[in-house]
Image (tube, rainbow, N blue to C red; front, side, top):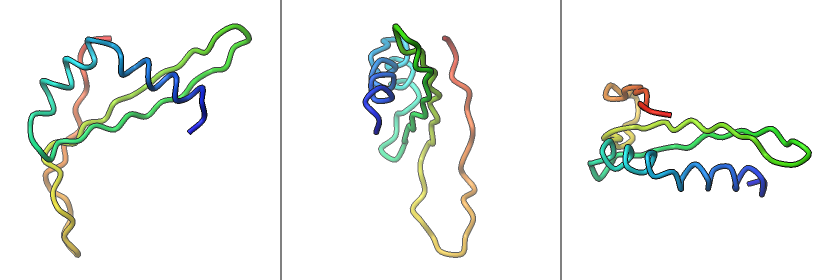
Amino acid sequence: MDEKLARVAALAGTNGEVAETLDKVLTGPNDRAYLVCNYLDCKLNINGHCTIYTVLDVPRMKTGEPCKSYEKRQATGN
């Protein structure tokens, strides 16, 4: 991972509101969160934007069967 992209992702993870929301949403042992970030490299600083995708109760892989329990959720807050 690019060092600047890693910094943007780390800053998103240190936001207390984000951590609190994820603690409320990810309650099961098979719940997962994926962080997708991008950034603009300015002369004096880095501006970035991250989106967090959550997948609740990730099913085990089954050959030949579609995943029926996936649901897209929108996080609230900034």
